[in-house]
Length: 366
Image (tube, rainbow, N blue to C red; front, top):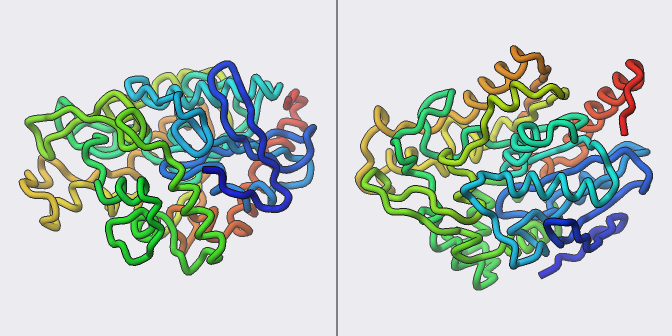
């Protein structure tokens, strides 16, 4: 189900050696490439405002990632590889388009894909801009800043734990604001403030989210029963399982990589999706009595996602990398869509400064 694009954005079907998918473009074809990777339950459509606001001379590239939007529905995410499938897809897209390197921007799950690019394809990066990224240790089921699992089998992170009401609303294309278990309610509660998004834009974002591929090998994916609360661990397929700490990226590969690019971590003050007290954290729901049998915070505390990200970045800096942090006050998880002008002011300044530094140092840059 394709969503119409905004004026100034071009949609093309691109086939790489790994995947056929829809890719959105803006800016001159010979411009400096900026690859923008969307989050879970979304698609390239979510980036459209930002594509159009990049500086003059930059080429915006935003694909529908595997499992989302108009990507080939027969290509599934092998969760046992973590998000390596999506990172390999991104590298293959750069190959197909003829780019040796790109600035890379990742939101939420897209930010987690960037960790895998830093680990497996560091030579393809000019810079990294994390925009509300998840933790390098995955989503759910860990208890400290270095990602120690709550249980040895990583119970607590599984496609089997996705709200069935959300899945049902996607299958039925239910866009009603009155369904408390529907996708629209979930997005408004966890992802963006609908009062900060233009009404027509909100519907485009919602329809793009509805285009997530649904099934046991897609969303929500499969699960494996566990004796540990909440009694499920990750299965083998789909984006939800790929985010399990069971399959998280090897951060040591990032620390040891020769090519350490500048990193900017942009986060939002009112982000309740990525937070040390996330609104979708099963520990928080258990503490509220919404999931029976909660074993208590000593065994299964809320995942300290922000602390985990900051620890990773500090360790990256100790290993020779550099990073900066920018807080967007008053905004939520999809702050790039809530206030795109404000977001792009920071993004644009960052990539321009990186390229200026490369130019002064005599780097190739392409």
